[in-house]
Image (cartoon, rainbow, N blue to C red; front, side, top):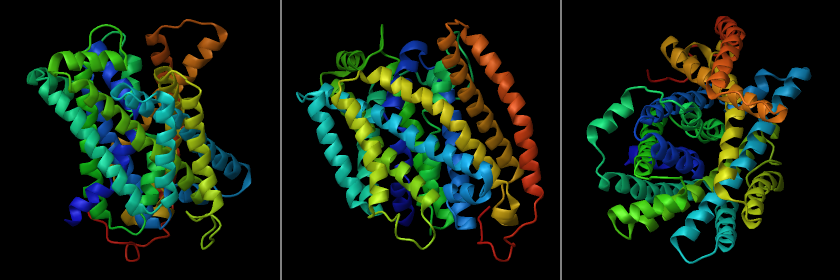
Length: 445
């Protein structure tokens, strides 16, 4: 029962990363390339487990969550101010962009699966999300998120199972890497929609006061289940022919499985948006609290106006986009692009923090094998972020580079950036430990 409750608690992580962006990206990948890109979801699920475990370990070992650890490591001077602004801007502003996609996707799902209008659905989503966040107790939030993820998982996994996809093709697509022509951007998008930067700060804050062994079990199971749900969405999208849209997916599933399948997809989309509409403002408020809330101070507690002002502001952005009648799919794609720029900052800071022997001690520092996986994930996030910046720059100057040129250039730039980063990691690992093996908490291997 204790382990089951841990899985329920850590369902807040898949609740955060399976939003309308995941539904849009995965279904579009399936509709365009069939099962060929499933392997990228296998990789990104493993990457999410590795990074989320590392961020939780920072809290358990050092007593500081990830935002506090970053603040303390880079405290003082112009660098400290710059890092604080980067983290705050990336997470709070990034979450505001996410929230627009979350609310738009949830309202689109509600409108697709019921007679309610998208604007009316937006207001109902706003009220429900605000009520959950205002109550604010961890038990209430995690219970709502666990129930939403459970419904979402049943909707998407049941749909994928009933479609009876060819098992051999699904298995091969899940474990054999392939990059079909023209799939590079979607491939990066599948990673970016699963390895979500604000989840690192949210998960680290949630780990306070918990046992690392129990965290690892609950987190791993919850994230793997989330990865399977994402794969179910891609498999469902593989049945769609023609231009991708939510209506096309709903219509195809209704034609293949019966009239009930379309509404089930619609309400799965709603559940994905609603759960993420809660976690995005929550993560923004938690990050701001960690950066500016002095230890022992009540000025930034969850009932205070500062904390509530942050999540209210993020939620208001999403509601504003919903009431303005913005088309959901373009807005969601824009939010995913912004994620590609934000993600490298979070991954790089995390890599530096978990290799800081002065902060983590000998017991908590990253193991060499874990570092290899973490560095690989950071490299992918750098390519993702740099390619997004290059694409934006090309659009400003009117250039038309090919996808191969963008990804090739991004790969070279990422490789150059990795050299000083790995040197900084090496220096951090050689620093004297301020947490002795005797004083550090017992960490399961």
